[in-house]
Length: 286
Image (cartoon, rainbow, N blue to C red; front, side, top):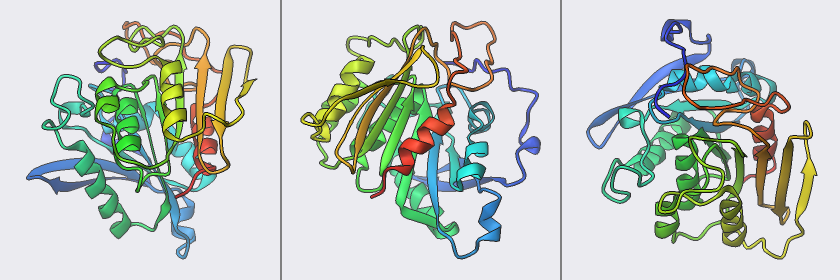
């Protein structure tokens, strides 16, 4: 997903008033990130806030992810902090195109960033979440596998379970997992890619097993419109859910359909991914 959003006309000088560009040095490399605090942050000085890490797709910037997903609006409505980290060379290490173990240390960066955010902001350490689009969604699933002691739930959009994560996933820990995927996605196939990533349905089954939810009743329902279905299982603490968008493309549901010619496909307007993701996160805490 190489820079297909026409957002060049929007620069960091136009970022929302409460968004700040920050940086930290991790393993001798300066890493940048954007932090958005909701309007209520300043007016409630005694309150600790949930935080959502929102990871961009390959080739995108942190500002493009913020402007495309528009998650800041949900942050204002529901009172949570959003951080948009920037990947090295605009990418995240999930074992594609680089060594899973010896490539960019994005997991270590995420741990260091969360520690820094807890120092600088009033973060509720029991309500830390991660989401992302495409490569950022793949990385959110790596976070679920490797940092279950820090993150309560993750949500991936257009990104099922990477096979390198499956091969290296040995750390115990239960994390809520929401998968959002369009059946007509031509960038990351809903039915998976042998040697690359599982299908959306197999990813759902993988996390049901990891969270020991196989015995839980399966709930299936239509939401938003006839083309959006939700399948989920849970135990009252963790849930695993698969939201399938019929004929949906490689897009963020509810977002403006930016498209500069690449086959990213249809963006459904039947649901708002930010609302779906937040409601899922709100049901999970460490």
